[in-house]
Length: 313
Length: 313
Image (cartoon, rainbow over all chains, first blue to last red; front, side, top):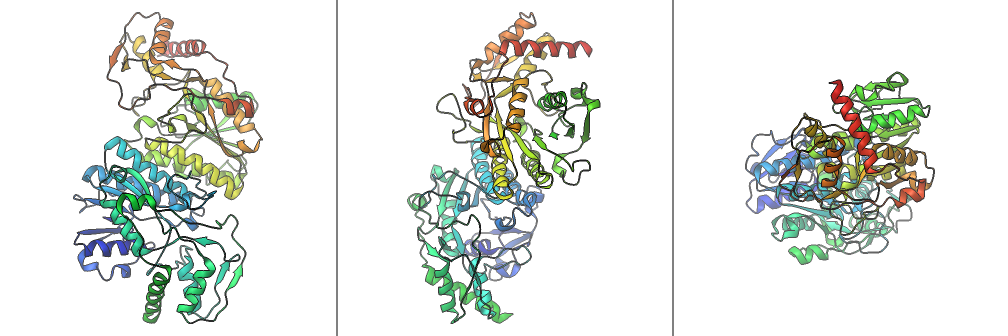
């Protein structure tokens, strides 16, 4: 089962699991996900349109589950605007998955967020850094990680968490309704529309960009790992240990789109993280996670996909 | 405003604030609290029967608040039995208080729980110990602490948390319906009924027992403190830095009740914390918190109160 399986990352995970011959159930309320994301695999999976905050235990067809991937989430960017909903989706959604695991014996995986460490004193960030969640989103994600440990300890169910770096790739989209504007589709959309995109501040801030197929590979490996740390609520960072600046991302996208448009520079966001890079050595050592896609290749795939979508429209 | 103000600790806080001439609003759904707890101050306060999980912003009469004390909580002992309700009361209740503070400018205080540190390697425990929440209750309390920091940082509202040691005193009661059996009223009730109480394990496990009036004193001092740490979501432990064993508590209660009944010893709880003692130096240094009541005196007051209640029944 994948919660949020019609979303950006969830749909790539669904494809991968179907490819591996699994019987996949996708639970998604389509608040951000969309059926089009599942186009290539829809006939091979069981789709359930359902809001996970209304519970999962009572849902028919979930009696036999081996693996629960909890990807559904409320966007961080708007978590202060609706902190109660954020808590319901992110944390109560997590609890619903854990209660379902008690009933089915499934292993539970949470996709958490490296943003929980918001003020690293050194780079790269690893799993030992103290948490410092600054939004309801990060607080609820951190609480969800603790919930995995508590449920493992109390009930013995197998649980694991991964923390994602900045994931990008095909099907990541700007969601105007939710006010969710990931930087790569935002830049590309503007350029495709002939507009100058706006870069926050001077654009020299860096991120650790992980291609979605590499993220999915790490997620599946964490789920399938049988070492104790991957069953008792242990947490693994999935990143690339590489820094790429927002300016570099902009230049790469402009080149792929043959655009000469110069970006505008807006005010830098207060408290924006200036540099970020994640050490994935624990995931590498434990279950042989290794990102394989360069930013150049990943961006090329992403932009190709966006161009096809735009052409279809 | 006091959430949970008709409860055990909340009603003592309400009395103290009324005594100081404050206009006090108590919000309580009476799921565990009871109006009888507020008997002595009811005419001087504004009581609102309300479930905080349904939000506070819309409630009339809360337009002007200076201080919000968030004491309402769902009992830890049953948090695994209803983890969603626990999250709603403890964490969404916290969010509701913080949203109300945004509107009113009030300072917000949370009463959190030293149980968040569940496996200390040394004693006494202080504020620097890494959290290790093992129940939904502790997880939601920890998330609430983080929420105080996030709201302070984002909105500038003043917030502070205290973590309580084991609080005891008059009006702490066994709640059969909620399955909440605090050790002191449990022992006393059994002895008053002529039954042998059951001690978990050998009874040599220790706790740091803080008398409720000392706890209230610390709470008010934390709220009134103007140092930065007490306004930016800082956390202060309130305890006594003394260990008292469960056997010692039993003997003291039996003596106060002139009872010769010998206790039974049950199985020790798996993962019971064997020794506990809390360092309150940060609260002492910051706002002159100092517990004044010995366990002997505190238990005498508690048992006197219980005897009066039993006589009335």
